[in-house]
Image: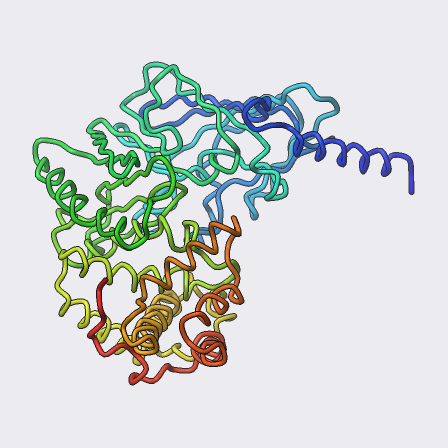
Length: 467
């Protein structure tokens, strides 16, 4: 091995060991961000204290929404060191020769268009004269490091004084202009930042959890606040009853109207410690679709994005079980009737039966997820019907002494003990405590992995016990 190559390898090893051994609370900040929000532009300054020798590659944005021109949202990039850009993959590499901080500046600008449709408003940063919205992958540059290091690398965020309008940071809900917060990289790269001239933040504490409701409220839509508070008062206690103690210390719900979308009622996505929805016109919590969507996203506190999730391409659980558990709790809380719950299950089975891609093997679904609405809906429908099958079998196998809630709590207990995402084998191990192992293994293989249509007679006959 050449001396220079060996030197790079040793330096890389030393940097990795240094980062891993730093205590999170006392570790120095490696990424110091400063944000200045002005009308129509978010100016970002970053002091980067290298965590890798010689060079570091940063990622901007992710593949959500399949937007190939997302990199256009980052403008006026400058740095104190040489850098190269891979715009096709939204990557920037900075080159340096010592440990001196690398100074980087750039602007986040508004590039969303009506042609981008719903995904444009959901996953692109939006910057207007009176409104800012961005998930943090499209606000911060994310260093390309091993996932296990993201809890050891520290970042700080400073909101410069006198922002153009009030701002909200999901990772620091009560952060004020001029203040600086320090957090783990893993916390900062899966969050949301928003602000508006009519921003309204409502804080309520339930079961020891601080819940922040972030809305755009003005004289014309002030009634939306009461709608949300009434909904929270019914749904959150049902979640506590189902799961037991809530996890985390705070949670954020962000809801704001679409700017250009009038043909789609509502869409939502989750982030660490919360979720956001965008809605059309005055549809928020006014019809069943919006109630189901918001409730689904709140359920991600536990399933999919929360502690109870299955690693890999297993959206049949992460999304499908989220759907079924959402319906279950909406019926339990009285927000929808038990009869309506049974109708939703039946309607979903009908939609799955009519889905032209319903027999697609599980391993092929995500290859087409962003290309076709049928593929997008398939894991939701398939997973929800598998949850309905489990609901029925658990109740009948135990003669009513055990329920779907018991099973889901068992999954949660395993996830908490494991302190990591579950595997399909973990799912089978827990399920086999409620129904025969050979049955659940066969069902997973046939109706999930191979994509065979689950027979309707195996689905709960719309008469579950909502305990």
